[in-house]
Image 1: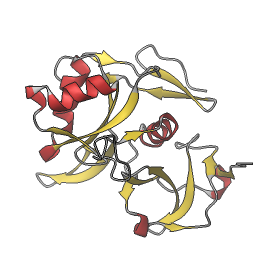
Image 2: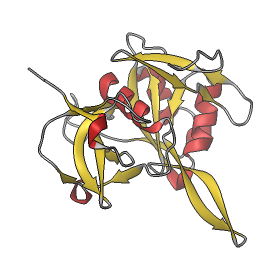
Image 3: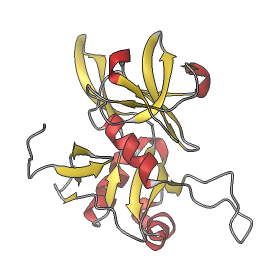
Image 4: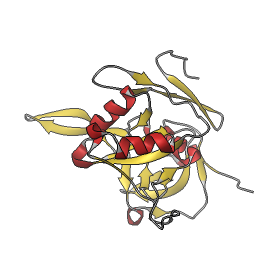
Length: 219
């Protein structure tokens, strides 16, 4: 069992206590905690030219929770191998807010002129236009559990990169990805669990042993 830490958010998801750092501005140190709230939804924003961290700083300082999935990567810098933190899904940030506040950030905030909605191309609103894409709370919290450890073997993948082993939903019951639900697949030659972010793509864990996988009974 993890120790409780006041500097961490304790998020209850499907019976699992998840430690998650609050969204925090790198500029001022301002932090915001994610609290499930009626009237708020997870919006997907796109920041051009890799400015997702800059957008996050502004939005967090405004009092809104932001999640950007990160992973560690090994890169050569000045001839030396270094471990650096990079965005898992380039240019995208996930913002938990109201429709009105989302519209303010995207349409009425000059400081965020480089920010746009990620649109839902499978629906039409009353004006026959694609509405902004939102992610369900369950799917988003599954995504947070899968990526909050910043594992260097996390991958953002296309469906054709995943060789699925059947279609049943499984749950990881042990290890660093404990609590997530997805489908078992071979990715990059290893057995992994792949989760879905609707209309955004697929995220693959690192290797997960068969002993850590349990089929979910959906009946």
